[in-house]
Each structure stands twice: as C-alpha cells, then as structure tokens.
Image 1 (tube, rainbow, N blue to C red):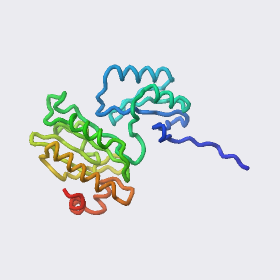
Image 2 (tube, rainbow, N blue to C red):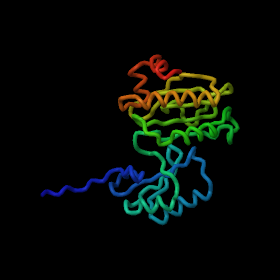
Image 3 (tube, helix red, strand yellow):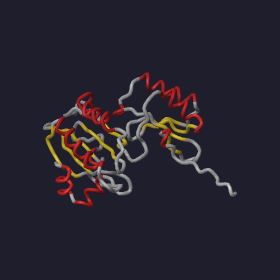
Length: 225
C-alpha cells in the first residue's frame, strides 16, 4: 500500500487558520466590535507568550489574532482563553465591524456601537450560502467601511442608510443603497428580511452576486424592502 503524505490545512473545528509556513496556525478570539478591556488583553498576551506565538495581529475584523501556534497547543490555548472563537472561516456571518459612533466619537451621528453589538449577538457565526460581512458606522466618514460589506449601515443626522451587496477582494463591489433615514428598529427589521431571504438562496453566492444575477429591483421585491 502506498502511503500518502499528510497535507495540513485549516482546522475549522478548532477555529484555526494554517499559516504561510504550512506548519503553524492562527486563532482569533471573538471581540465584538473590537471593544476590549485590560484583563482580556493581558490574558491574550499571556497565552501568546506561554505557547510561543510568533506575533499578535490586529485584524480588519476588529479581533486580535494569535499567530504562529503549534497544532498540539490549540486546544490548550482555547481552553485557557475561555473566549468564543471569531468566525474567521466558513460560509457564515464572519464579522460585524463597528465604529465608535456616539458612544465614543465626537463626530458620531448614530449609535453604531449599540446597534452593531445587537447585530453581532444575533448573527455572528450564522451559517449562510456564502460568507457575509456587516458593518455599522455612526457617521458619513464610514470608518467601518459599510459600502464594501455585504450589509452596511451608515449613520446620518436623520437615521441609518442601508446598503447591500458590497465586497472587497478580487472582485470588489460597492453596495447598493436600498433604504435611507432608518431608525434602529427599522434597520434591524430590514436586515432580518435580507438574511431570511438569503438563507434560502440555492446557490453559493455572495449577496452582491445574487443582486447582479437577479437585478436590484427584483431582489428588493423578493426581500420585501
């Protein structure tokens, strides 16, 4: 019998991403909105040091990745962290990126933190036909980049502007604005409708690709916007 060499890859069951060296992994505890407190930072730093991590990396999803862990140390590291994994891989809601909004920022027009954390609690990690990213900004500076997220909310003096279908990557796409001047409750209701429609979509497509396939007006009619 011819033996086959074991080829390493990502380990979704351990929320671990194989690194460029082909040997070590990165893990990223979930830090909703990137809001973190000193005791959590100390814990992450202590565990990174204990298990010989190569680096700590602040990610675009507002997490802190512990980079360069050995496979045999992953379970112990997660156990000592006692934090939920960030949904960094898989066909699911990956992240909800949140700006400081009216909680911290003098330019904020709307409560991005409050709304973003509600969306994170409700949707983070939800399985979908493809990966999905959200963002909530508290003003038109759009520091959380809502227009290049699958679902984006931008705060204005009159409420939230909702965009759908944005993405970065190899085929970048700006989101389509589908509603303006929304209250927080209206924004949540509209996003519920979008997610409920998207969950039943039969193809593995990002939302922007779904809109391009069926047309914006048909998409809005199907969703009920």
